[in-house]
Length: 178
Image 1 (tube, rainbow, N blue to C red):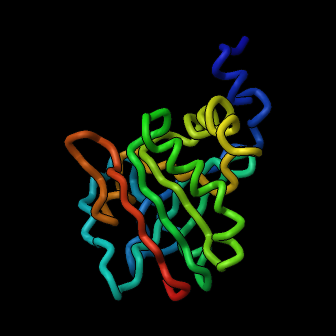
Image 2: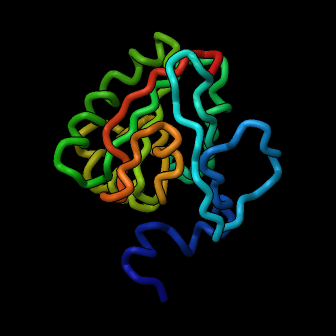
């Protein structure tokens, strides 16, 4: 027997659709197959800098009605607008996100991919999409909503507020070279 939230998340039906835990920031020189320990609390030293390669990462995401892991390096060769925000169901971000979603086709026509990122889980992104965003934007948000639990990706980009436990608003335009 499943609870209401588990039914909404399609947990019973998603057994084969689960994605493995995402790695967070990918350090330069790190093996693509190495997995950090779940108990490992390492200091994130790389910070995004103008004129330097953007810190690569892997994050769990809610996109196109499902869950998948996404790496920034998957977008090499494309412009990327990476948008950090504090959290789903907040007062201002839904209007900002819906404005970006409404212009998504224009972004795509300019060769820009959009990624949004908060510390909320991919499951919260799913519920937010279904309960709020799909009512604000026809068809819902068309780009990946990344989960940065613990703020490791936000730390690499200098936008994680450790005291509040959230990513603050931050926008990064990443060129096709990364």
